[in-house]
Amino acid sequence: MGNFFEKLNGPRVTGALNVLGEAPYFYRDDDPDLFAFLRRNRAEFERFYRDLYGWELVVDGRTARLYKSRWYNRALRPTQHDVFDLTRRGDCVGFLLVLEFYERLLEQGNLASDDAVSPRFSFGELFEFTRARMREELGSPPTDDDVRKILRGLWPSLVRFRFVREIARDDGDPDDSDDSDHVLYEALPALHHYDVRKLGPGVLGRALGMIADPDLGADADPIAEETAP
Figure 1 (cartoon, rainbow, N blue to C red):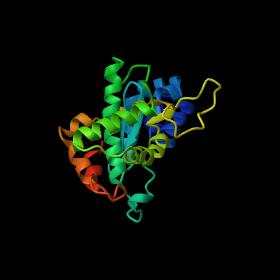
Figure 2: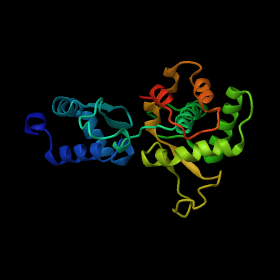
Figure 3: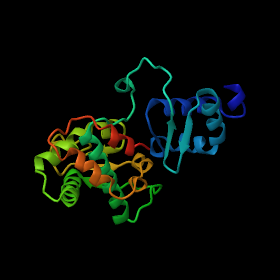
């Protein structure tokens, strides 16, 4: 590493390299000092990842991530890659709706993506938004069970890959009633890396048209491609 970071503090370089590899997103709130060090020395880290790995380092005001444009181990199947990669139609549609909801939260709170405060919401608010948008696009109301099936199927991935975070109750513990519409969540900055507006008008309607037929668990490669970052 000497050729890339010879003028920088070694332990801090080691720390930054590790946190970037430990999760898909490194947030400023995770470690403000280390995040500031990374941003301050971004050029060195960008050159390191570009020259040695062919990866792109993406850093904004609150988030850092590594973007890998290709896979080198051809023996691995797509399902064996430990990345956020939606393959089910219901999950893809749900993610589009979450992105639209996130944009609305930012507008309602007069927030920018790099503001220190992230918008908060209850699961019930997201459910009501999703149900209304699906009715608007489909013209006929889906059942509440169908709407919840889409959101609940997607939710573990959103939590695991740190797109949302459950807000602890006043006693510091998470809410055990994870089926409750009153559970509060924080919309994390990674959502800003997926801009639904760039997909153009009508994408949600086209995606919903693909799941209007009964099987919400079918493969959905065409939708997944449209939701790629």
